[in-house]
Length: 329
Image (cartoon, rainbow, N blue to C red; front, side, top):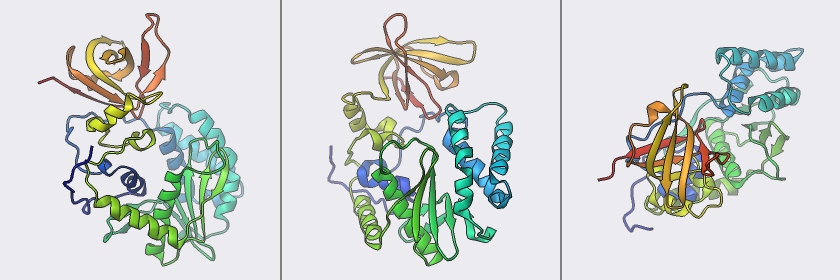
């Protein structure tokens, strides 16, 4: 659905991730109207924990130690202790990969002095309203831009979305330091360094795409699973819900709240009546269910659970999930 009325999106600050999402779907940027949409749980996810570990390791110059793997292990243990045992799903594998890659990462950082290793420093372009925080920028004879990725890469190349994000990061690095990175890499925990080609022409093209998308109508929605996944307007975007019913394994549920069952843990299971049948969603934090039977519910970023003994399809709440419940007018 396209509206002829454009919106001034020039005031929106965009991260590289949101800039890419905007170029894919102009409706992804703009104010949200679902003010009552609940946030997800505050537990740390695997990616965030891995980034925190590396930031601490770099801050104490663990990469310069005689045994950098041991200092990385120490940083892991310190953060795990701070979480009090509330470890995110998938952390055991991510931890093993992180420690296995520690030596290679230390070699990549090399003998650079601390002021040449820039870890998670925000960079901004006030004119274009772009800002981002690269994981690592290495200065010196060779300028290197590194983006840590904890997800498993199975193909030979990184996704176009990641290439676009790194192109914007490279632009911000050049704007900040006056030098375009000589080398741009994704540091994958399962594959190690993966080079990404960034050119002057590529940067220019990315900026043109962002400018063009900013000038588009925010009602020009172009739903796609990879674009919609983390979109902050997802709960209220009707074109998304129209499209999601056709996705083979949609991670979202919309329908009428029929039943709520409480568990001793404080979590609840909710039964949602959808157009395609009833769906149970388990593990939802009880405080997020403010409505009752008959209310309209939308839940996103759900994991799949097994079909229960009654034969009903199941979904489960995760650390990225979100819900909105409204009483029909």
